[in-house]
Length: 152
Length: 299
Image (tube, rainbow over all chains, first blue to last red; front, top):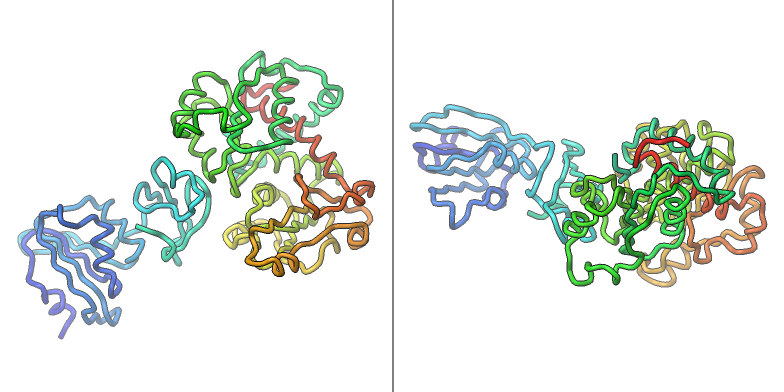
């Protein structure tokens, strides 16, 4: 089975987004980060642990009938730094890009420091400190955290 | 301009402060008054206890011809009723020309600076930063050692939670110095700070106090940071006259104070013990900071 076949495994979507090359097992976390839940309204398809020629295994998420602000999608780069976002219109991929961790993450993830002012008031703001391996620095308490220490 | 952190603080500002503090030093010694603040109100908001920082700020405001408003005990403020820091700062900003704040939560000064139009001076935000302490530490070293470049500064104690250590280490990264670290394994200087410092200065861990260090900067080790008493007792150190023999003859011993047994009182008479002199320098340095931040005025 080719990767293309795998891409098609869940039925093709007419309009929406295909978020590909997610690390295996992360699809549900990705939906959580994107805030895709009961309120979403569109159709959501998830493929987990499917074969990938590049990564061995991967997850894929398809969101039908809804577009999203690219800045919002970039938030998934925290857990899926190599994810690609395919914008589909009339069953065709019209745009494709790799996600990028934003320089500033405001109100995306909480600062894990229990003694940071943002645990009591105000919006959390984390700054990109290092891309690989990913490190984020709280704009307030200045502490630095790796991806596995963050809570969404 | 606010003074929140020494991370990224410009060498130009540091040097300007140290040079102005030198001009203020005789005024501070003689308890004279200069009218650089022109009667402006400075709010001192101490949500946490403080002796040296609070009193030296009060004295600095007074000697600079300013007026102090504020509180030295959070119980005297509406924060006990649950008022947010945002609301407190918004209100104080309309009363004062500058806000000096100590707060029990890390990052609180940066948050206050976002809210206030007046300059905010961080007087300590938990285990994060204490930038005016770093400036007075630099002043002390420069004054007593004749400069900063070429020196080896050794930090001893709890380097993980010590905000004075973090602030001074970042401030020192503007100079050609070697930083030595002496601490128990569980309270080492955080890896991200070591990594950042290593980009501009030499940083190394050492297994003994003193040695070739020109400055030994001792800090306390808190019992609550250790899982059990035995572990704490293994890690705790006491600088006594015997241990002072490990320091170079021309080295200086500093401590941000308060001390809790890690430097014995017998050491006070040793000419290398400079912590009380260091505490005094808080006055001219804070006069300089207030003067620069409020109106950029010289003496």
